[in-house]
Amino acid sequence: MSIKPVTEYRIAGSGVLSAIASLLVTALPLAAATSPVYTGTGYLVDVPVSGILCTNASGQVSLKGNVQILRVQVSDARLTGRLQAAMDSAYQPDGTSIFGGAACQEVGTWDVADPATPRFTPTGGVWDMSYRGVAQADGSDVITLTGYGVGGVIDGLRLEETITRGPGVPSDPAISFTCRGSLTTPPLSTVTLIDDFEDGKVTGWTPGWNSGSIAAVETNGQLILRGNWPGTQTVTGYDTSGWVARPFNWTAKNNETLELRADLVGISDAATEAEVKLKRWPACYGFSKSQRYVLLWKFVPDWPITIFTYEPLALKSTNVTLVLALTGRGPDLIVTGRVLDKSNHDAVLYERSVVDTLNADPSLSTEEFEGLSGMRVILGPDRAPPLKTFDYICLALLQYTDGHLPPAEVTFDNCEIRRYGVPSLSIANAVRLTWPAVAAPFAVEGAPNVTGPWLPVLEPVFESGNIKQVTVPASDAMKLFRLK
Image (tube, rainbow, N blue to C red; front, side, top):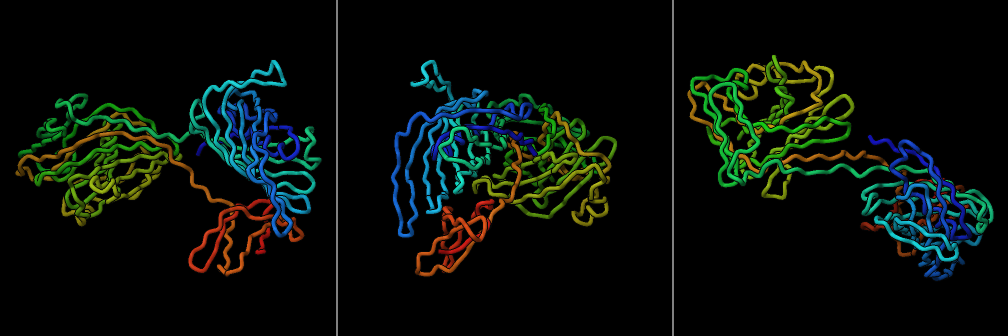
């Protein structure tokens, strides 16, 4: 979970425009984690489009298409700039209103040597925001805003804001707006091609084996691993396996995932498994696929392999991608194996996750594994904490043999590493309203209490069959609802 710094701003404006002016400091700075409080000021520069006023049959007055440009000056240069806000507002006869729209703020600097004609110079990046607000008859406002940065040093930053204004005359510039919000950094998302095996040379990979022999050859843009174990019987699994390893350093972080991916081109009849492994040498996690099963496992020195899951599945073994993913979750590590179908837009053919904790986690015994697979391999229980640092990636093959099988062969292609942040899942504080889709044109209204003021709900209404529905974010201004 990322830490969300809380910030506070105070801004003065004038009239209806002051509600829009309050938006101009909602793009929070990255430095908020260490200095959480920032202040800023916004000034109206121009109203290029005044908008259109219209009145409906109920006497409700609406302002449509109003556009304002504001000068924004904040202590953090990434928040200083020129804001353009578009607003639609619906007024009630009692003086209350609900308003909202889109706003964008171009990052830059202002030359105010002549206050009457301030000059703006863009420096790169735009805050793209949307907002909604409710103005009460006493002049107080509540505004919510969300947005993100595009380009420059703010690219990908996300923000959420709640903005309040106390009661008073709307045009009084002495009344401040108070904004509280949070900022999240862009989610990590990188893809690193380790090797596409197109140069015809096994460069950067080191072969390894415990017995027998292993050969690695690049041909036709693919990597072929060939293993031979004459006279060697499989006892622990590692005694009849071979691999190629390549240095790659990574430390597990909370809510960050590392994925090792490799295309599986094919498995020969004499090969039992194709494997992808992430190592803290010589310990490792592994995901294995044969032509008749898949399994997730772990190995630590001086102890037999620990198998977390075994599933008998006859999945295709050509033109698929093997994925081993590790995700930090506090002191634990989530270990995931996937098989993707390259011929069908990487559709997931198989996916399974286990959580490796500080405790002894469930695993298969030697007898249980033999009963499921028919293979006698000495296994051990989980006796080690999660691995959190890694220094190698491996592509491997295993042959379960009595020592009389011919050489085994597995073919790989396109090995890559992906790193990405795991987004936090949240549940919106909202209510879904439904009603029959009758012929009469009913509208939904909301109010803070039964006496009002009743304001129109502006969220889009969807119709399915004979039912209409709308989802409304919960707020102090919308606690009760009615059809009108």
